[in-house]
Amino acid sequence: QALHWAYTAVEFLTAASILDKKGSHFTNPKLQLTGHTIECSMKACIASVAAKPPNKHNLVQLYKVVSYTHLRAHETKAN
View 1 (cartoon, rainbow, N blue to C red):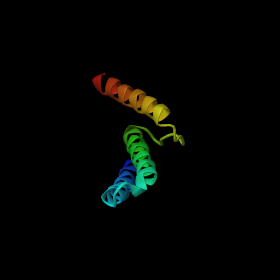
View 2: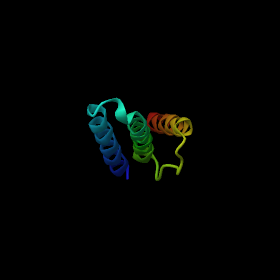
View 3: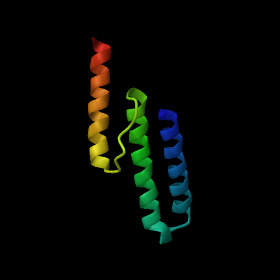
């Protein structure tokens, strides 16, 4: 599942890059795609150490889950 989220993030990033080359006419869609890229990247991080990422779209909340999940994973490996 982590690879699915990672590939999806790359697709959104690619689309944002294409719009970026088109000039300043697509600022809002480009920002939206960039936000989706960040969301999918964080969900890939979560899925790499947990069963399923939460069905959230709030980037701050996802960041907190990423931080907690990876901290717990590192603590488990240390023990």
